[in-house]
Amino acid sequence: MRGTFIALTAGLTLLMSTAAMAHDTTNSMSNDAMLQNTAATSGDKIVCKPITHEGMLVRTKQNCNTVDEWKRIREYTQQQLSDYQMKSMRFGR
Image (tube, rainbow, N blue to C red; front, side, top):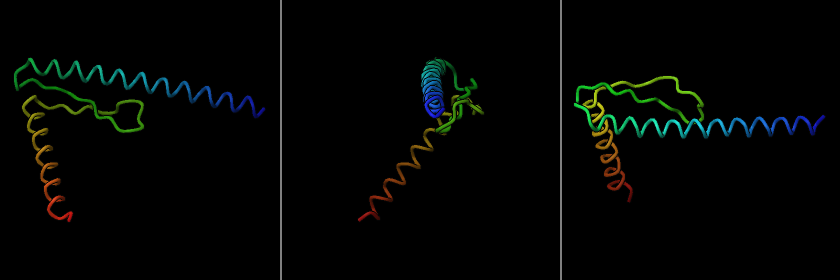
């Protein structure tokens, strides 16, 4: 009985990990296609990007913004990170 339970648990674990790996590959392909699609468009086109969280197997939401808004969000995030790094260098001694 224990052997059957262990074998069944191992089989389910292997099956779930395979499904998670397939899902990750699909997301990376769709993100690459999405980036290529937005590169050739104007700034007014709306682009939706999936919101993914570590450990989740299914997407729950999408975040939709125009190409210009995505650019502003990226630049703002880069600036925040740069400011944080500069502050940590100043006070890190």
